[in-house]
Amino acid sequence: MPDLDAMTRSRAFHRSRTALGAAALVAALVLSGCAPTPDAAPSAPPPSAAPSATPTPTPTATEPVARPEDLTCETLIAPDVVAAFVEAGWEPQEDVFRIGSREIADGLWCIWGAAGAVTASVQIYGWSGIDPADAEEAQAELTEGGWVVEESAEGVYITENPDTTVATDDDGYGMTFLFGNGWVAVADTKEGLLVIELPA
Image (tube, rainbow, N blue to C red; front, side, top):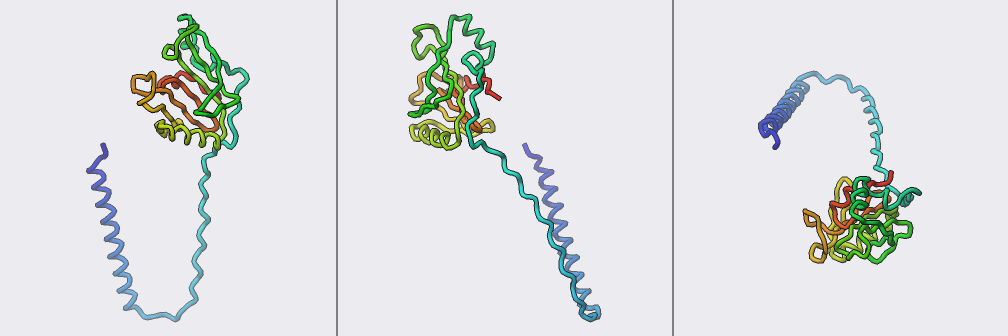
């Protein structure tokens, strides 16, 4: 909680400085009116202001991040998660990376589950490079379909409409895309994104 006493003291200090400055200015004007007027002398031109530094904008990707050659379903997520899946008899199946109606050609979409498992019994993890224009169009398509947008320091989260989602995490989030700078990741829940090891 902000220190209200400190804030009050700060405002009072600035007000008192302003009042003192105004009083000094009035006194100076009165005294200058009483003093004899010297011969007018050419006034020196005011010093030119130093050029202000232009802030450097945060760079944004203009091209999609390239998919690492060694990126597989087994390397996309944390090793301990892979080990738990393998111990449970699960195996990954690669599929096309889709965002709404669009397919991302070079993306990695992994469906982990037991052979013949139904949709509710699998887990999905994916990653792909994506250029800003495609990312913007994909986000627009999802939001028009009722998906929910949340912006954060990590990027833009877009989560499946809670009214239509099949499975959710403990916070009620279903399938979620995370759009970063030149890339996008996906998991069947928002919490699932935490185990994805994003390519450098």
